[in-house]
Image (cartoon, rainbow, N blue to C red; front, side, top):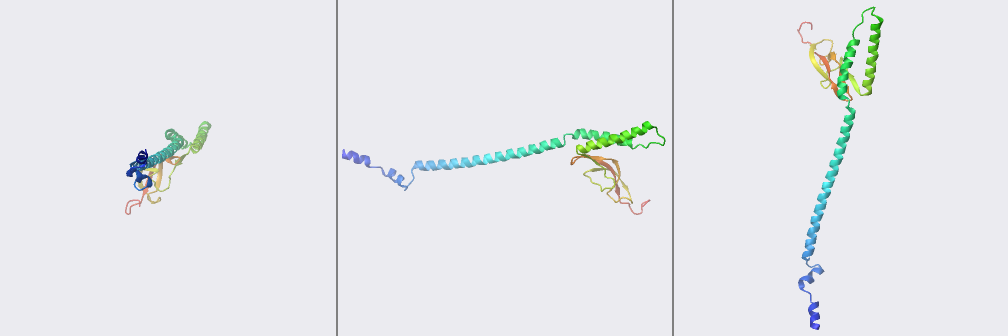
Length: 192
């Protein structure tokens, strides 16, 4: 019996060395490898999470900008059409009345003035501004040159005549002003 107890108390050398830290057991090596793998997966998942979160934030910001622009420019198509009505009213108002015109025609002219004033007030309320560049330097971003003329009175590259006024909707060009632009008079040309 004492021999049996001695045999049971004897521990193989390979098992005895590992608990004392001399050489790690294969299970510890396996657990350490699994731990490193789990850490790598955790870092990868954290990176994916942070990227997804950044993408969602960018998407939210883009949606806010698009929503703001859709509100700001929602009337763009309507505004593009209504400016033509304003042009017609302005042309009608520009007709000179002959002396001794009937009171009805004079009232009609007053009505046109009031209508233009109301329309301009509405334009202002909704961010539509008139681009009337008479005498200003030509700006290809807001003006469309339909021709050029030599001019001694107006500096070169400045607007001589506005054929059709332009319009801005907030800060966006709705319609460019159609203009005639001055060019420098050439020396020796007739009329120079």
